[in-house]
Image (cartoon, rainbow, N blue to C red; front, side, top):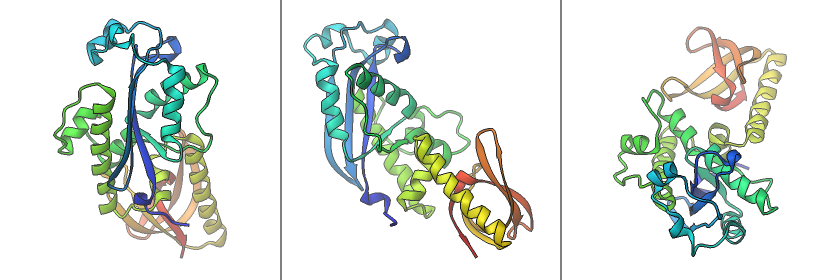
Length: 273
């Protein structure tokens, strides 16, 4: 069943940490989240966290969180389960999800918990890269500025959540102008979960192979990697190939009247004509 993006609940979250590497022992010292659906904010979460681990000088230079500020804060064993309950039933979003999710999963593991196995995670950084190709950098503050977001990045968890939400909202509106309104298409473009992306691409590849076997024509909606323009194409598929971790459709493009190569994960929708 098709579902509009605005019918889905999301939670944008951010962490501040003692350093940059959870694998080296760095920990979360602040976590915040904003839960919303469509344009409506549903709830917020914000808490300092005392991991019993000193904040590095480099981390303090960025977030200005001191060990003294954490003395009266709750421990990860108290805060992290509360946050897990806060996000339950929503899709999780972060700007550079690999960083924040790595820290969150580490904290969960340390207290013998885990995130829900069916939780969908979106990376707002991936959204920016795919919808705004060609920028000289993709730091949150830079992307926000390019999108006309006026708030300043303060490198505290909730203020960064607020800025990320504004960026997400503008990028979601950009999706709508391109006709990307269906949750399944949104997931195929921006999900962080490798398993979900692989499943989506396998479904597309299966449909392409069916079209090849039928010697038929494929109608696709495609978003360009170079300029994020969405076009509709009729393609006579020839083969599916894989290169450097991506699947590609190779076929004769009736629009360009020549053989073209299309990244499967950039195909928004497809049907056999």
